[in-house]
Length: 331
Image 1 (tube, rainbow, N blue to C red):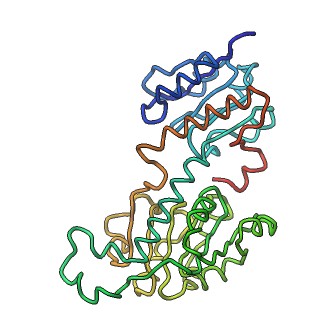
Image 2: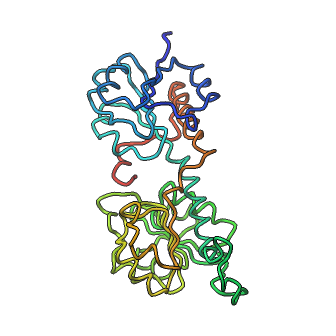
Image 3: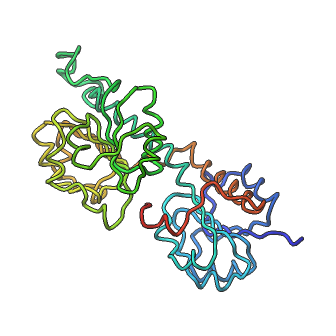
């Protein structure tokens, strides 16, 4: 039997393409490495993939179009060692019969963890004590802005990979979890022990609101001024999804009243201008789009890709399969 060949389209960053996992891949296939110090262009991918069975992409990869598929008659699977694939693969790639996988489920675990960290941070008003606790931090220390997550109503917008990861981490807190996701089924909700509600009900009745929706034409700007006004007094709003889903000027206007708190890992634009009102409000915490990447977790994306390649070659269904039908509602 001929040796399988796998092309890696990007320079092999040490935090993702780690040696032990690479050795595992090389035990199953000949690996064509990228030694250029930059990602291959689409034309370079087509040239180098001509005799390849699989292609591995990651952050910074050029788009994979039909020129690659037509130049690579043996190509059967493309695995993305990162999350979003919309900018990389058009629907025609799926129509050509190429299997696509990604590592979104891996990154989702860390995004869910960060969403929980932000939730607890804001419930306990921890930014108040940053940088050595400023003058007045001990005033009313027993109760001022210090609340527990236990038993609270938590609203999750988007039952995505990250939304589900956040949901799993809420289990020990005995929360009442409600979800807005127009594509989620009642059966799925029942299996997960959650209640599906409309967006308006979620915003008005949740103590914690965590945004996990993907960027689609339907979700861009989904939280405008009319929706943000529905957030209840004393609530905590978390965004680890994408900033473009929210009207940030309207969000700043609502938060300037002090009636609820927000923690934003992502903004629009990113970063926000230095003079933006959200940067000056004491009830707002802004991180630097760090929810997904972790120094020790990135290797798991490559592990995920290699495991799915091995399943595919064994004639089994990859665990992280991306279908054409998923494109409409995924990031």
